[in-house]
Image (cartoon, rainbow, N blue to C red; front, side, top):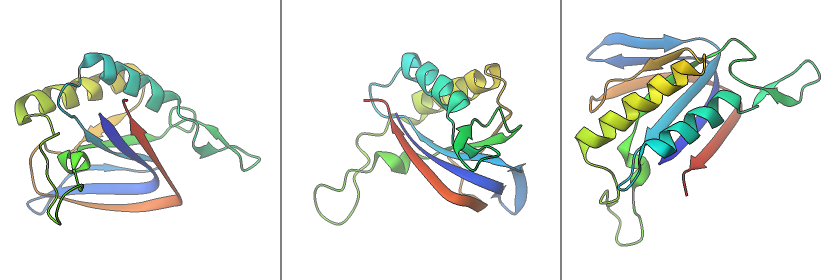
Length: 146
């Protein structure tokens, strides 16, 4: 699994011209399931994200989590994070998990985040999504399962 985590002051996700999800202060998380990933990694990621201290405290130090600041997560499945650029100029996505299993683990991870008391809004798996976000910082963290 791979994830790109971005701290935002707001974000929205649109499909076919309609707003599907929007958040205020929080995190936009682009999430990729790769072949061989399993529920163990979903749990590890959900626990890490809920506790990840990347919001500033009153002294300006990154010392608070999304839960601490009352933030939300916009959780977006993005298979392109599995891109292999080692040959040629066209990315290969052979490392991405198949759609059915990837969606299953994506939804499972979203549920685990909610169980961690992290308000989580979703994208639309497999859709052409338009995402507008206002990055805060910017702060961008990359997480990888192995």
